[in-house]
Image 1: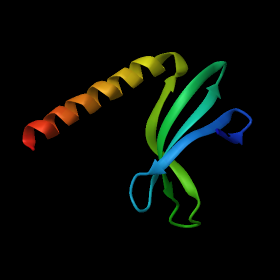
Image 2: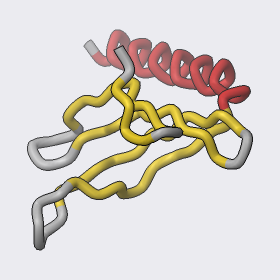
Image 3: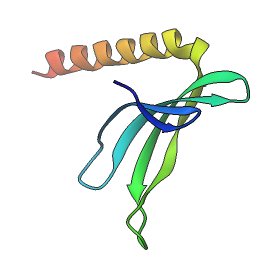
Image 4: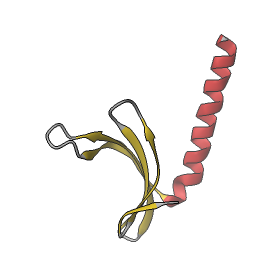
Length: 85
């Protein structure tokens, strides 16, 4: 279930990137456009609060192309792993 972050943002998913950082996928509205934000979050050195770092924001209409690109990349990685096994 999506978690509301603010009035125009919903946390859709998150997972650890490593022992300190996490990847967050957020649905947000920018202007009048629905967007998907995929970003690395890291703990601030001073207060330990998580802060947004580098990432990617796409308008929702690009989600099918983004999904297809990820699927293609995953398939190619699997093919490489099978070849090297």
